Image 1 (tube, one colour):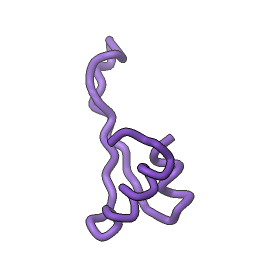
Image 2: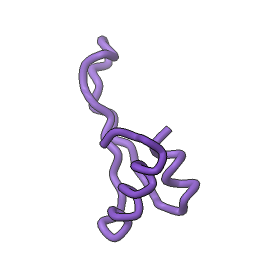
Image 3: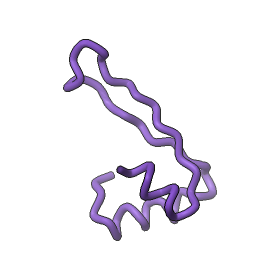
Length: 52
């Protein structure tokens, strides 16, 4: 959901899945973007009420 929203706003994003394969409830999925896109990405997430 976050990756799609960023890509729709022309921000390249990569997901890193750190979830445990046997228990999907444990671990995180991290979103990586270019440093220069950080401020715009945070603004997009705030406007779309995504918790950061």
